[in-house]
Image (cartoon, rainbow, N blue to C red; front, side, top):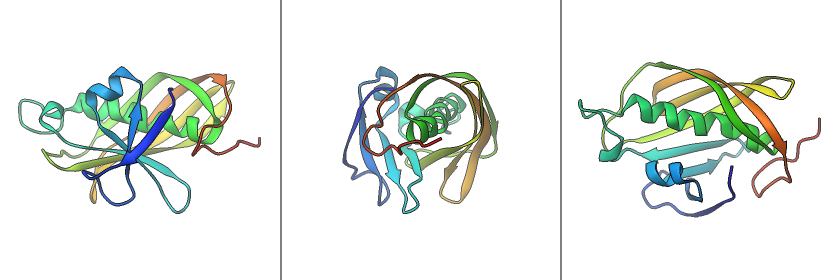
Length: 154
């Protein structure tokens, strides 16, 4: 993962800040926003634009899954300060979303063994859950905690 900076986010709900990343993929699908809750948990979000739609004018499943990969794997960066790659991502699609809606996502570490993290995640839009699932992520490099990450003591 690359270093990120945050800027004001006029196109996002309160508490979200735009996340400027060097990643080409995030720039292509973004802007991506981040929020840190009162409990310290972080979520990512994006506003649905025309580029995110399928032929039925609904949020494309590929966008949901690509966003899930970032939003769910991010918990490893936040809680462990470890760079990671995705091994497997399983998504169950439960509802749709349309142009102009704001989509959010977050994950939680459910298990860790031999540098492989199991993460449970959810993608939502308002009160609707769009997708749930799990991911397996391989941690490959411990690094210094970045701003907003927790120092892991384990």
